Image (cartoon, rainbow, N blue to C red):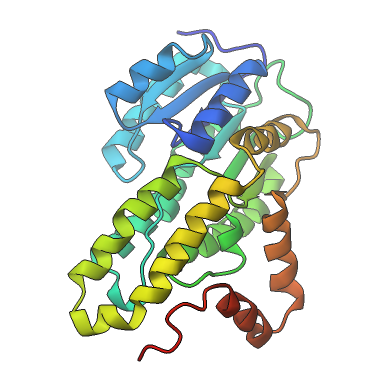
Length: 299
């Protein structure tokens, strides 16, 4: 059995790059043993040398057998000490007009961002209910579900992504209320724009969706959609929010005596949260529409 770090063991999904990688490194440096979920042996090999407290864990959250195999390994290596935390960070982003979204891509979005998070949570909850010796005071186990500011305000052309994140918010609320009597906390982390590889992937694949749609349908959306994709990537590139800020929020959720129910990281995440609460729908629609005026005259 591998010995866990002094502060216990945490599983982080989607740790091969971006927010997940920064979170895994941040938690390892804070004294936790981190089972860093990745989908490839290449990513596992790279992470293995990043910090001695990181243990790469090959894990595809959409495959039941992969989740079960990961659970067997973590149970074997942690023995009776259990886990102190789980970070559901694995995610993809499908960006396209909803009229043009292939249904298999919509299903993939929900499978990774929502169903996968629930599957991993079900697998590791028994370990999270075990209080680890030397763990921080507070809940026996802690779950952090990484959502997004898009989980509060649905932007155009991010309908599939918003659907998955709105659903993750609801699932997290239900889970928090179910697990509170069992001494397991649930926090939602809502990052704003952060430049990570996910946005480069969005920009690289977004146009393929329109190219596969009927020409007369694609023409209705192309100008506005292209303006949105360019503006979205630029907003991420110019953001002052860094992955390390997200990692710091996760670390707080894993160590505070009373973790917050929600962590909003970045000024735009706060703005989205406030706007969703105080602005009437039509006013909010108008604000969003003015951000992407290109192609308004097309029919």
